[in-house]
Length: 236
Image (cartoon, rainbow, N blue to C red; front, side, top):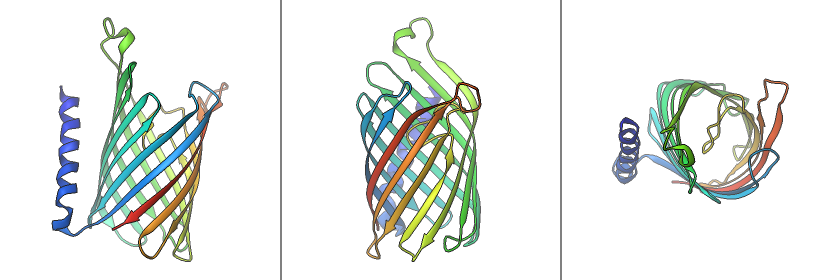
C-alpha cells in the first residue's frame, strides 16, 4: 500500500509540474528514441521505443519517461535537487521510482535515494557521478500464491565523463549499474558511449551504444546484451 501511494505521488507531482510549466516559464527537453539489442544471456533481442521529458528549474530537475518493448512496459520518474549548482561544480540529492510490467508474467518496482554531483566544464571535461541506495520489489505471477513478493536491497552507482566540441557536439561515456528503464542488481554494470548533436534552434540528435555484463565481479562474467539506440529531441 505504501509503495502504491509513492507511485501515485510521483505521478501527481509530475503532472502538476508538466501542467504548470507555462506559468513558471522553465526550460524543458523532450526526446523520442528507438533502440535494439542483441541478447547473449537471458535477455532476448528486442526493438524498443521510449519517450523522456525533463523540466529544469534553477535548483531542481524533474524527469519522466515511458518505455515499451515486446512484452514489457516501463515508467520512470526522478526528482533531483541541487544544493550547490555552479558552472564548474554541482552537488545535490534525488529520489527515483521505476515500475516495470512484464505483461502476463509479473511486475517490479524500484526505489532510489541518491547523492549526485559533477565537476569541471563541458568545454574541457566534465565528470559526473551518482551513488544510490536501491530497494527492489518484485511480484512474479506464477509463484504469487505462495510467495507474494520478493524484495532486494543494495547499492547503485553511475560514473560519466563528457566533453563538448564547438558547442554543438557532445561526446560522453561511462559506466553505470543501471539504465533509465533497467534496474538490475549490482553485479550487472553497463558500459556506454554516445554522441549528442545540438542545433542552435533547440533540436537535438543522439546515438548511443551500451554493453551490459552479468556477474562481472565473479569468474562467470559474460556479456548479457549489446544495445544500440538513436533519438531526436527538442529543447523549449
